[in-house]
Amino acid sequence: MSALGRYEALVLASTSAARQSLLRSLGLAFACEAPGVDESAATGLAPAQLAAVLAERKARAVAQRRPRALVIGSDQVVAAGGAALGKPADALAARAQLAALSGTRHALHTAVCVMGPGFFALEVDTVTVTAFPLSAAELDAYVATGEWQGCAGGYRIEGRGQALFSHVDGDRTSVQGLPMLRVVRLLREAGVSLL
Image (cartoon, rainbow, N blue to C red; front, side, top):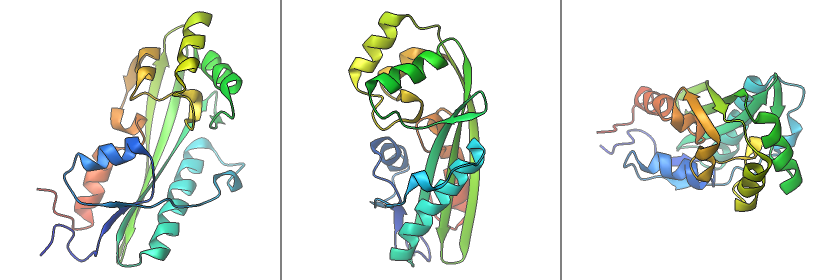
């Protein structure tokens, strides 16, 4: 019997390099597929709920194409002052987001949805991150790296963005986009052999 048990494949509903790297660390073979869902269609939700809705949409979109696979969908929403921060449209928007986060604590809600034949789970992991007070020069230097592109909150903590933060309270892999402690537990619950 394969490590995947009754599933024909393990599929990550994402093209994120960070999520792929985290899942690859388990040593399982998996495929990646872009979910192709409209993330802007879910509005008016609390940040944690928004992350959950989007993670489930991503997993369901891929599961419809791969009905015998076990699919992992994930989404992350950065929340500051109770409001969700989206992916900045340009460098000016990224700098504004980072300036708003400077010297403050904010939450990252990372949802993971694991689904396949006979299995469904949806969970949200919340991590609190504290940013250093950042000078104008530090903000400009970080924005110039381009790491902000495609990242909610305007930063990528697995790269140079880690220099922006003094504390991470919670699962660091969750901040990177895939809460691996939860993923491992859910894969085990789905019958996947990890060792």
